[in-house]
Structure formats: C-alpha cells, structure tokens
Length: 403
Image 1 (cartoon, rainbow, N blue to C red):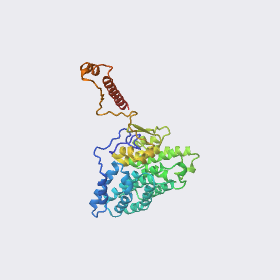
Image 2 (spheres, rainbow, N blue to C red):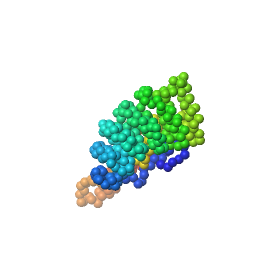
Image 3 (cartoon, rainbow, N blue to C red):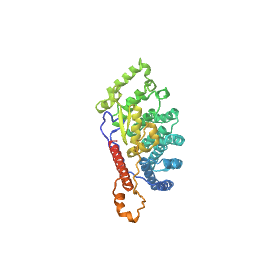
Image 4 (tube, one colour):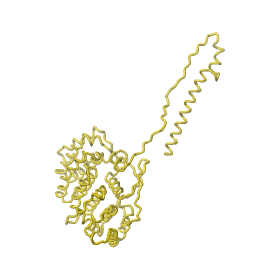
C-alpha cells in the first residue's frame, strides 16, 4: 500500500471504500499444495524459499481450511526449522506463513498449540536476529495471539514480550517501533478493562507521549492509535504511574490531551483529533452487498490490522473465513430465489383417440381445430405453463437487479 500523508481517518486504515480481489491471485489445486509442503524438507535454501513464498501467496489469497487443519503441525514445524537455520528471506516468509495458517485455522486447540510453541521461539529470535526480523516477529506474535489465546492471561503474556522490546534502551528503527506499538495495541483491543493488570503497564502513556515527539509519521500514528484505545478503555490509571498527581481521571485525560497538543503540529495535530471526545469514529465497510459498521476503536483496530495483514486476500477471507465471521459478526449475503423454477427442455402432450376410417375426414376438424377438443385443451394448458414460467423467471431477474 503506497504511503500517504496523514488524514483524519488514516490512523486505522487508508480506506474502507472499495475492496477488490487481485486478478493475479493464484489458486493452486489441493494435490499440488502437498508438493510445496514437501519442498520445505529440501536442503537447498532456494527451494524452501520458493515453496514458502508460494504457500504464503496461497494462504493469503485463499481460505485453505482443510489443508491447514490436516497439515498445520508439519507446516509450523518446518517453518520453525526455517527460523533456526534459514536465510533472512526464509525467516520472514516462515513468520508470515505461520500467522496466515493460524488465521485460517481460527480459534481452538490447534491455534492455541501454535501459540504455545511460538511463545518460546519468537523471543529468542528477537534476541538472535538483532532487530532484522522484528517487524515480522511482531506481526506473527500479534496475529497468533489474537486467534490462539484462550484468555486475557495468554494475551498479556504476549503483550509483555512486546512491551519488553519497546522498553529496550537502544532506539529501534521506525518500522520496528511502529510494528511493536501497533501489535501491542491490537492485543489490548481484545481485553476488557476489568482484566487489564493494574501494575504491568504503568509506563505506557509516558512512553507513547515520548514517541509523539519523534519526527516519524508511522510511529506517530501508531502511538495515537494506542492512546485512542486507552481513552476508550477508560482505565487511564493502569497505564501511567502519574495517576496520583491528578484529582480525577478527567483531569488526567485533560493533562494528556494538553501534552499531545503541545508536541503535535502540522499533520500530527490533524491526526491527534481522534483523541477528542466528539470525534466521529464510525466507519462502514461493504462486502458482497453486506454492510459492516464499526463504532469503537477496538473494532476499527482489529479490522484494519487484519486487512493490512491479508492484503489483496482480505475480501476473500472475509467472505469465506468462518473465524472472521465470528469475530466481526459477519454473515455474507447469499443470493437465493424464493421460488425454484424448473424449465423442462422438452415437453409433449399426447392423446390417443380412436377414429374409425369412415369418420376420419369428418372428425379431423373437430379433433385438431375445435377449441373444446382434448388436444386443444392440452395444448392450451402447456402454453399457459410456459407463460407462467417465463413471467416468474423475469420477475426473479428484476429482483436480483434491485438487490
């Protein structure tokens, strides 16, 4: 997605207006998918990298639930092997594939099993890689936790890993800092205010206010996102060690807003307006004729994060991924007709009439042309049936066009 200047709604996504599938998306037959899975066992790094790239594109573009369910153990195991011994490109692709597989699996024991595995390996990778893979690690950890965590305790475990990374003494590159803040905020969106620890995040608001002083668009946007979600959550005292200095939570919020206005100018000032109480945050997304409305920062954060993560495959996943249907309470519209019409390819009316030879000439006119004859009545009945079918079919087409 191309970079743009900050706008009032760009803090959560660039646009909710038009969603289209990429015409160049791939759709690999199931049998061939197994061949790419086997390629992950190859010794050549180039072969593994090519297989990883293809599987990432396939899982990103299509919902391969059955394949993921039957092979997630092998997929994750081989990806973990790439994390230990693979090239830099392999590691990034493996992290991306793990997140896509878990997003396809949806919540449940399988996703939780992957979550438990990664909670051990990803912190080690952060230390070992010296920030080279920090962005992909944060994205993978955030997505896997969002799907695979069973409760707020699991979610906070991942949030602590990210918080430790954010709190390191060394200054992180812009991309890594943005990914960390955005991932942490995503996980916060999945916890209710009563479950948030009152002690673990005391330094968060001072940290975010400091990030707003940085001259970096992406870090600024991620920090404002986090503050908006904290304001909405309504538990400011859990995110700052300065709560005792204020007479009330309103005074504390006003103090934070004053600081934000002081350090924000230009495009940052425009973006900071989302923190104002009267800011209209409702957004509508239309998918397959069905409208989804989001009216909280938690909802907006989750849908925008997943949309960015899936890229061109977002629409397809929203239409077919049952986990996303459950998360966003989305039921794709299905076209169905109230009347099922069956038009026969050939229909014939046959009457057997005994006509003595001596009377054939005199009876022919009565049998074939008389409106009261059995043959005429049968022909009329058949034509009426065809006319009825044609009218009902036409009405159905009109109804579809109106829809």
